[in-house]
Image (cartoon, rainbow, N blue to C red; front, side, top):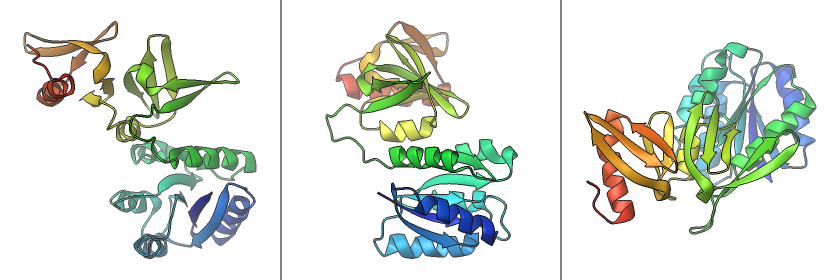
Length: 246
């Protein structure tokens, strides 16, 4: 079950959010804070004292320390809680997902929409798979859920607030950031080759250097490696395959 913190400078909105969260069977405990500074102090005390904090439901427009600034500070924690923004402002969504928010809710918050945010928080807070165990990503497809195994993914491509997973069977769109997926699969041989592309080393069959450009073949696709990542990619592939790539 989840332990969460709700933060909002508007007391009625904070009380309503806390009430709705406490009605959810997946929520074990709800703490509240009426401003960003108090929320930060509470988080430092809770985490420093060894108390588990799985998620923060966070307003954006607050006096003093606003929600986006607080999120940036939280991102510097050794094991930061997941973030769900709850706001009346649509225009901050891009910044929120750049900060790797799990979800972005608009006020007034509907109970069914909050329930979906809790579901996403629960999924994001699930422990990483044991070494050697294949991770699986659930993908919603028009009323059906397909489970895409990590080993089947050739590469992942950032698409705004989503990631497109490319496999031999097709591609699937998942709502998460590429940075979050990179952390989740960092020990599974996935390599960043571009700011918007993550590839599986096990599916790389060729690395080519032509006219100053670096490309690699992943499955049946040819992808360009950014100049910034080319040296690191080559070194990682050599280590991964324990061979020499020429």
